[in-house]
Image (cartoon, rainbow, N blue to C red; front, side, top):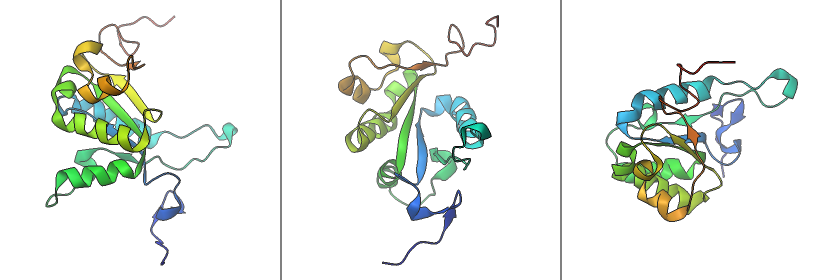
Length: 160
């Protein structure tokens, strides 16, 4: 077996632990602005030097950044899900109605389980915003609230 010498983050691609991507962002294109912002923040994050952790750039999969045309979409997404460590699910009413988001969540849960699933509330309330596959797998998912009104992310909130 020949070793792949392609470098990613200072390691050979086949040596990166648990897959090629650190995170896969699943979202509705109605939430593309938040998904792009979150992707950029994750990719540019560096842990503080004092922690003495790896300072390599994190690899994020987001469909518009990493997919090419010409092949079967479902097969490509399954390959990318298989090659990722964590799924970040941006929940909104549009995401709950999206068959692609639901398929991505179902495939990830089947492949990796719910421990590496990170739920982010982008818009709407929980009952309207969770995809069916998430509701079937987890009774009451914990989530990070990034909704503009009422969430901790609100710019209007006063900082003590």
